[in-house]
Image (tube, rainbow, N blue to C red):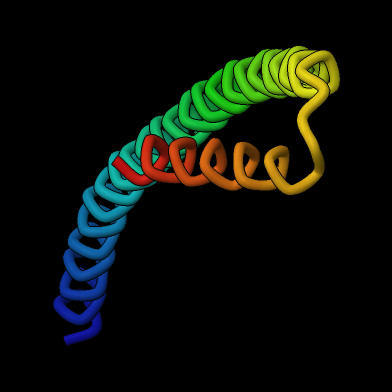
Amino acid sequence: KTKSQLKNCEADFKNSQWEYEVLLQRFEIIQKERDDLYNKFIKAINEVQQKSSLKNLLLEKKLSTLADSLEKKEAQLNEVLSASNLDPASLSVVTRKLEEVLDAKNTS
């Protein structure tokens, strides 16, 4: 009776060991998959950050260029308006019409 119990216990132990090994292998595979997915995720985030940083840099440069251009155009316009010696009322009309034209161009 004791020998059969011992054999049963040994068989159960071997089955448990085998199940443990199988589960351990599955765990290691799943852990590797998790690590791979995490690394891909981090890589994707880094790529998006790099692209957005580059895009922001280009947009800032473009904005700076446009601001410089606007400043020059405003200076040229002020020179033309002051050289034209228009009376204040006429100057106001010209300025208002110019603003209307620019607003119309900006909205289209």
